[in-house]
Figure 1 (cartoon, rainbow, N blue to C red):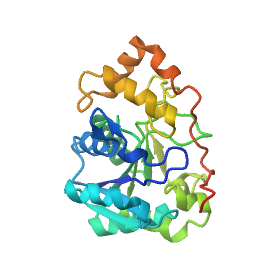
Figure 2 (tube, one colour):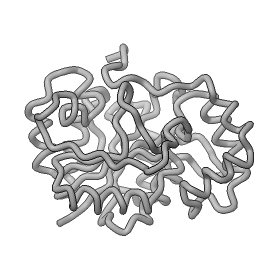
Figure 3 (tube, rainbow, N blue to C red):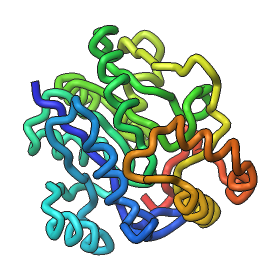
Figure 4 (tube, rainbow, N blue to C red):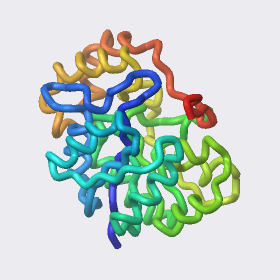
Length: 251
């Protein structure tokens, strides 16, 4: 069974263009996502899925220079992009993360994978998007499906938000699939460690300056830094996650 981690990345973010290659502690944010995620023991390979839009040429160039497999597909039908990337990678199981999460935790990915296998789920994640409640900080998000289930979604998803957000087809209709959500015993869902706005980026820059080792720090270590420096989360207090059915109007 081949498990492939596919990182969703594009330069034309609606709220912070170019964010995936913005520097954090001297490295592009995309590099932090890849190098941290690769420490997960369950991952056999890693691929970046970007778009055919010319604005995303720098992502392909960076991946080529750094020997990271990259697939370029649809700009707004991200489900189609993921399906073809997974097909190209020869994946049996797909783990989805996004390129705006530089603190993605490899140990949490491993835990989620074990949970997915134990539950024999069609779809497993450590959160669902708003309006659902979450218990892990925003920025640690991962989702897991098999290639067979991804193919089923690719063939059957019809709503625009289902195509753009990749995975909603699995959970937006109760009873359609076996959905298993890994919750943390304590609720830390109020924390926001992703980069989707200028304020998020400013917060992450300030946070990285206080981390002992951004490459190996665990999410619980980050939580301790936040507790010791609560002013950090005031920087992006006005930033909020998008609802599941919100789609990019440019599509």
